Length: 72
Image (cartoon, rainbow, N blue to C red; front, side, top):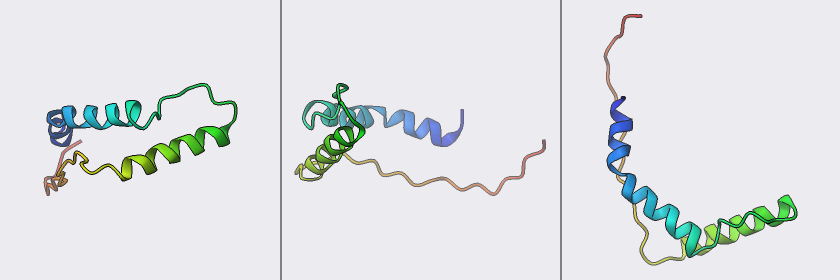
């Protein structure tokens, strides 16, 4: 497993918290839209509502750059 995948795996609880807030509080998970325009307007409204939340979980992620050569 790559190093960046291992780092993100440790942050899984934060990622799941954000997904839970988007689904339950912002009501993004609604699959009975009759048109693409309704889906997009619901998605954008949910993301706009999320942007006004006072506390948002965050991940500090700095990509690791390696200067290693690999032999193929």
